[in-house]
Amino acid sequence: MRLLTNERDKLKNDLEAVESDVAEFSKRCDLSNQAQEITAKVLAKANAQREGLIDKIDQLEETTESLRAECYNLRGKNLKLKSVTEEAEIAKVENFRNQFEFTPYYENLQAFFVNFGARQVLAELKEQHPTLDLSAVEDNYPAPEDVAQPPADGA
Image (cartoon, rainbow, N blue to C red; front, side, top):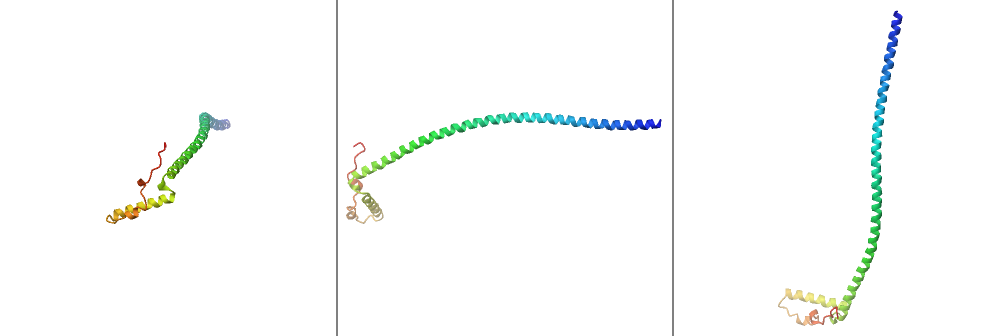
């Protein structure tokens, strides 16, 4: 009987060990299942975000294409504007030349600057030395108001 009791105790211990292993394995399976569920949820959420980002990328690509087209159109308008601006500048220069050529006081550019510079120096001298008589020197450099003016733009 003692042998049977020992045998029974040994089998009981073996059974407890196996049940413990089964419980541990079941616990691991439960944890694995929970991890798989969490992974599936996270993966579903990441896929949803990915789809949203793909839509945003598509929208940005469309916006980029429209901005490129608009930029190309603006470059064309800018070139036209530059040509119009250049024509206006050329017209201003031509207008200045026409007025310059019709005024006897401005026979050439060098004479203009000589007279202008001399008048400026004479004005400074008059301010600093009011008693000094500069009328003889002033006669050599006529003032612009003493000379005939160019015709008006409409003439």
